[in-house]
Amino acid sequence: MTDTAFDLFARISHSRTADEVVRQIELLLLEGVLRDGDRLPGERELSRRLDVSRPILREALKELETRGLLVSQHGGGTYVADIIGQVFSRPVVDLIARHQRATEDYVEYRRELEGITAELAARRATEYDRQMLTRIMEAMRAAHAGGSFDAELETDVELHNAIGEAAHNIVLLHTLRACYRLLAQGIFFHRHLVFSSEEARGHLLAQHEAIYAAIMAGDGPAARKAAQAHMDYIATAIREAERSGEWQRISQLRMQKRGLPPQA
Image 1 (cartoon, helix red, strand yellow):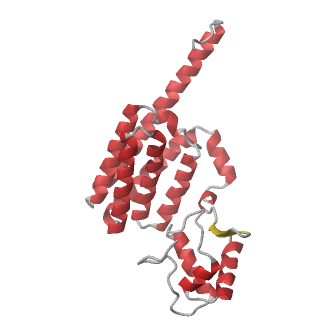
Image 2: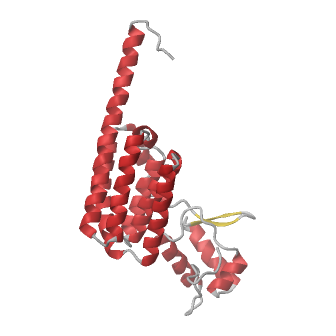
Image 3: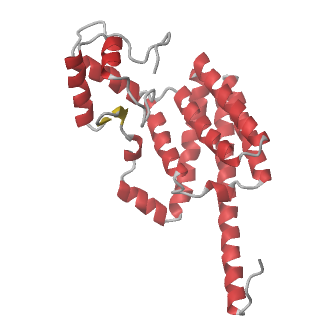
């Protein structure tokens, strides 16, 4: 991390105590500015930027590590801990992965969250938020045009994360990030199976374009409508993919029953 016009680790101007350092880093975590895996500057650099003594900084970092917000690697620096993954406990994640109904509930839940988030983003997005959304959309268009499916999927999650940030609601932000984490891990469904066709990718790009355009125009109701239409499409695509997969399985069983090997 380098010095910019807006330094993440701003100089503490009042009482230079460990509590003040803890509070500043807490807010960076809470606002989603610091993400899991981010490395903090070295001790000397960070104490200079915060304008606190190194003993005070060490005390603050130790407190944050004790609370599980930071992790330090011997000789390798201090990093933001994986706190997003802890929103859903491991037993709940395992249950979700084992029951198909959870997929339907997930899409229903996300439909409402995405709608609210897009509407708030349309109303609250700053110029910097709009710049970030534009950069991600440009990357998504390039990935789509180049036929890079994995890159397009990556920009999909990046776009939804950026919309969550532009909504400027801390609870929504972290709830959505937890949902996207499970989605990226294939807990609810495998996106490669659902969205592997060229036609589906075209529909998805158009839907993302509609959400982006509404947010950029500051049209909250249109942003909500576009986001919910996007989730409705995903729900339909999941059902069709599951049905096609079941039909494929049954057809294969029939061939096996008849003693007919599948053709290569």
